Length: 347
Image 1 (spheres, helix red, strand yellow):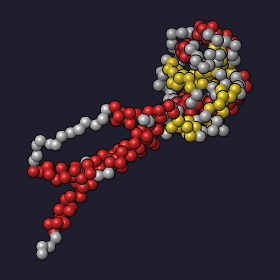
Image 2 (cartoon, one colour):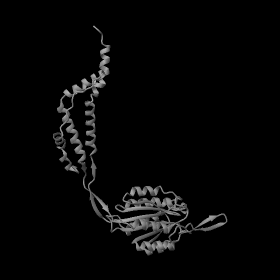
Image 3 (cartoon, helix red, strand yellow):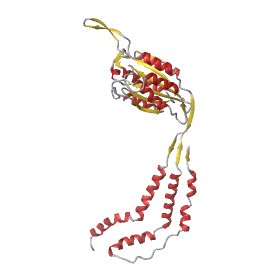
Image 4 (cartoon, helix red, strand yellow):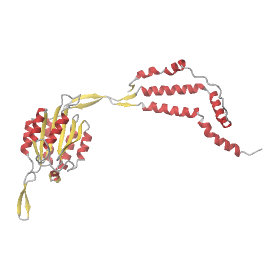
């Protein structure tokens, strides 16, 4: 549907006529100075003054109407579209410390490093969270807000896929990551004052850096109404063949499950253990069920602004009128007519 956002702008339509009546054009006398080379331009000017003034007046009126059309903000209003809003702010905190390079996560019969598995599974999880505001925190020795809370799930996914191990340091600051999440979730969106705040924290180690202790951060999260789901990443211990026999290898020896369990319990959340790609995917499915996307629909009619079309037309008409006013076609044609006169045979 076509409409004008500010139709009252058309009340200015008679303004030029009123200005013309109140302030009539000043009468100019004959030029007091004449120079020989000015005669051709003077004749062109006289011809233009003798030309039809009605056409120029209509053209100026057309330009004024086009400018008013642009000022009235013409719009094309599309069909009504539903938008699902869940009323939940969800922050992802992903560990990108040096230990996330460990290749012990099995995805489709292929061993990949932990951060690759997290990226693959979290990508599908983020895409499913229609209507949630999602943010991303990356942490190592320090915690960084990579993406603020946003409905733009594509951008969050892009920044997650571009995360590189080591850019935040080699150690793990779990407490600082929780503290940063509390800070970003403390002030809700004005239209979402009753939102549920959720933090999904994923790590493969223990707190070895940062200022805030994890349990202290969990207590602050509980006071702020933030629910924390913690996920410990790493394969189970296994026997590996060595040169002098078998040896027990535990790739998750640094994982502090006790602290992660306590953090989740303090905030009415849950702790999960991701031993491979399948278990990590199941964890995200469980979180989807624990924190379902609410089916609360709002409606939006997309609006496309069209003011640039009449504005461009007005500029084009004014440009053509300006060229005609200065006699540009005659000036451009004059050298060719002089050449034709000089080249004509004499009789």
